[in-house]
Image (spheres, rainbow, N blue to C red):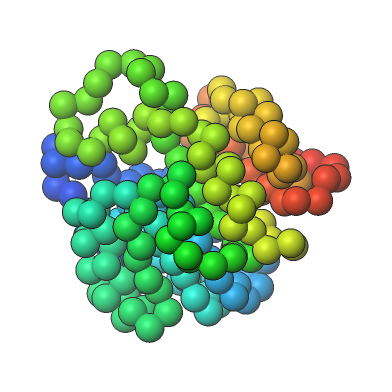
Length: 208
């Protein structure tokens, strides 16, 4: 980003802090710069992905869905700082229950879900970090399948090592990968994450 998106987040050691994956996902999701009627950010955290996307493309309305009330309060402060309170709302809800929150349908959903399954690795001593880093992928994919407009898109950021699992979860929910982009940390090093666009319509996968 060019410094025009300023975000508050938990202090080091006091909660999950976003990283470069957030703006990378935002750029991938709005690469065509076309207007977006309604963007939903599932597991939004402090709003990094959605607010970056709103800076990069014309977003008419956005809904940030986050389960942690304290993180939601930070997200609302970030929305206010960006002067977007008339267009961006923050909803406190578990992704698995988001349909009951009546957030409406979206033509674009962005998702930066936990990268590890529950119980993987050692627990973090930092409050809130385990919830952000460890969790099942399926509820996020199922939520996308229920919230997407017919021609809508859901864009995920996920580790390359679990790309096949994301594809399987998507197909089980009636979604199909149509576009993907590998992200390499440095020249000569293997890709770390993959950005994936899911749609209802099946077809060839474009690898960018």
